[in-house]
Length: 257
Image (cartoon, helix red, strand yellow):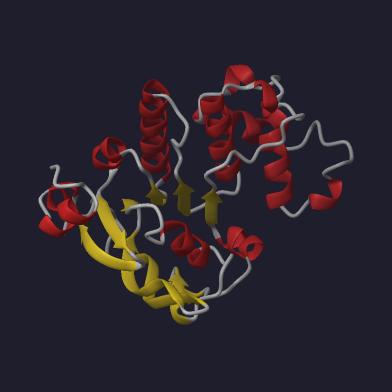
């Protein structure tokens, strides 16, 4: 198994222990155990219905596990509400874009900064002067500095996803979960987005866990790939190890390397 080098590589950022989630008689996640090392890029792949989004929901507090535990920075966070987890340094984006369409690009990121700093009650008061430089820094990092005054709803789809990433970065995460970050993008937008994500997480030392259907994007960016099948973890390794894993090729890659 191969991990990216890191000064803190020996300290797990996220630990799942025998994590299980059932809905009625259906076991959506079954006894998943894994650790993520700090500063690494980790992908979860699997067919539709494999349990990827359910696993994300368990990690980020949207679901409470039937059994098992979730630990972040060696702290038990099992079942803690999502808004509390964001304060601890866990950020997440969803498959569908989640931006304020009528606010400008600048205002979207600025609002996230205001809320994260505990100034929510001031969100609808005069906020034009709050966190201006921080907002500009985030927009520059996601390539939207020149679009600061554009209403978010007028952005191209790929740019809206970049803005959503910027909103998530405004929460200053150390663990970032991205659910299908390139869904609905063209090939050119996908390549641009993947390179942007790679650069940001490397520069900021963020631990990344993401799901993605574009297998070429997964192989191009990941230090480590985890494969889910019917809620169970069936493979865990480097890109090369996953490419040559016979079980993965049969169950997910369709026999293709």
